[in-house]
Amino acid sequence: MKKFVLSSFLTILTVFLLGQAQVQAATLTINAPLEGVAPAPEKIKTDADPKCKMMHPAGLVSDEVIVNSNNTLKDVLVYVKDGLGDKKFDAPKTPVVFNQQGCQYSPKVFGIMVNQPLQIVNSDDTLHNVHALPTQSAQFNLGMPIKGMKLTKTFTKAEVPVKIKCEVHSWMKAYAGVFDNPYYAVTDDKGAAQIKDLPPGEYTIEAWHEKYGTQSQKVTVTDKDQTVDLKFKA
Image (cartoon, rainbow, N blue to C red; front, side, top):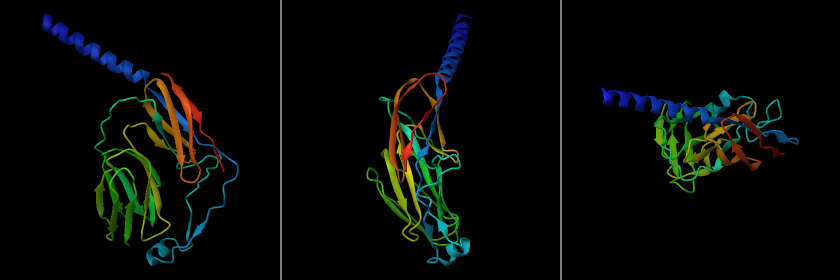
């Protein structure tokens, strides 16, 4: 009977402590407003590949700078740069899917954890290439000539950013942020990104953009959700 009571007490205590940990974690929303006027997007011809030309008869427009309707930036990678100490985190087993579709990379900017699977897919009926250029992990350069083809790779060291380019179609570029923790996100079509379940503490939050570089800010996180702005200048 005593063992049963003790076991029940420990179970209740564990559930309580887990609940307290969940309550204490907060969501940090980061906005990426743009000050000034971004350059007009460059027009891209796709004539070099007849199948890309067929998909985009009027050509493409550069996605280096995407300004949202509320004058914020899309595809800004935001992450905790400092403040986690020596905490260790296991990589998810669920892969990040990186697609080649419509002669473009999708997503354009993404985060992934060290040793998390990166599933690379070719959804086009044309030859694509994925040439990843990390400096801390092994590079890879993959030809993918078949529609539906899938390959899986990993990055072994944290690094921001890792450029990915296509050696067949010069306009195709993407960027990965490789992290040893799960606290990162990418801004959406409202210029906002959410870092969820962040424990209370003092952190340096950094935001990286392909053209405008990095912005950072020290943030004190409590058990309350909050919003910060990391402004970029055109």
